[in-house]
Every structure is written in structure tokens, then in C-alpha cells.
Length: 62
Image (tube, rainbow, N blue to C red; front, top):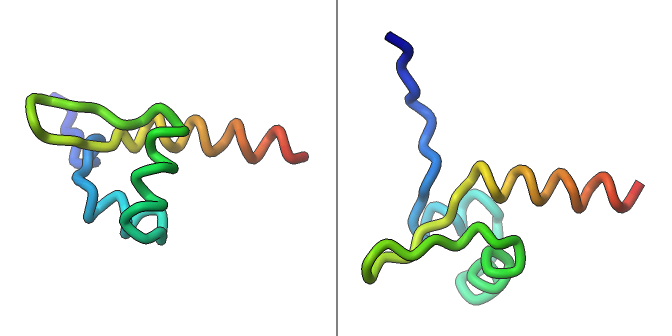
């Protein structure tokens, strides 16, 4: 059985640490990337989607 220890969905505090952005900018950035996920009242950020979209942004600049 394979173990997956990598966290995929993170809360706002972890998203801020991951991106190095402040609260409001991190929320706007997550929304613009399309990685914001609502589960009930919780708002989480999908790191797999964020990484994929950030890679696309990086490729578009080259």
C-alpha cells in the first residue's frame, strides 16, 4: 500500500506561508489561480492546482 504524506488542501495560514504573501493578497492570488476550495464554511487552497497554474504562468513568461 502506498502512503501519501503530502498535504494537498491547506488553510489560509498555510497558504500564506506557502506563497509568502500577506492575507488579502494570498486570498486574491488563490482565487485568481482557481485553487480556492470551499468545503462547508471552510476555505482551503489546493496546492496541486496552485502548482500547476504557477507552472503555466512561469511557462507563459518564457
